[in-house]
Length: 248
Image (cartoon, rainbow, N blue to C red; front, side):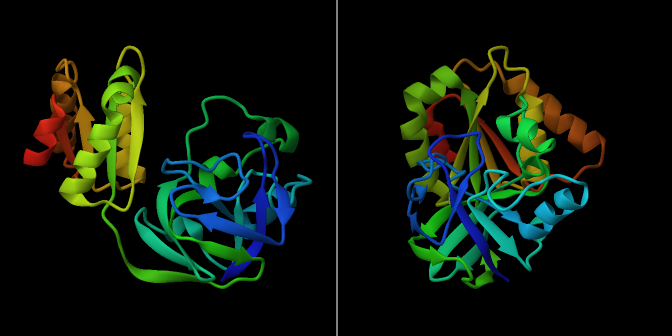
């Protein structure tokens, strides 16, 4: 299991350029890459085997064409759970998201005719930074870290997002906290909860809801899950103030 390619770009939504070495920065991602930042999708990974599948279908694509930062070889990324730790050379990553939802066709899709990244790519945050090189060994470490997510309106998260992050970190110390905004009508709550508790397997989800508009939606969502006999490994909590997080 090793690094097949390293790629960066100065803009989002385009094919990335291959480089021989790169530097992973804690709480950012790959130095010089447009996708880096203080969020949960700092580094993207895609398997060379996934790219080969697209090439077998006739697409003229190579490493970096799907906007992945690290192209891996010899590792089945789809088997890794969110919260898993990877050693890439002397650096350490924590898996933070499996695949992604693409609401619009990006430039990559139009250029390549398909985009495998939403289906088979994964994302990670940088736990330990350092230089990585093509050919570096990748190791899957034992165990996994606690993970957390916060759902709220764009406005509430803009006003209180920093305080909420600090409260969640102090309460559970997750490896990362992902932030997911509700749309204007708040009717994407069920979709977010399905993804976070299902595909992503996030340990704890906090719905920050100062006006109390989502309480019935959460109750209904959990009620349907119980009636369907679907076990819930994710703990879903509702709070109207940041102070409540410390008491959950």
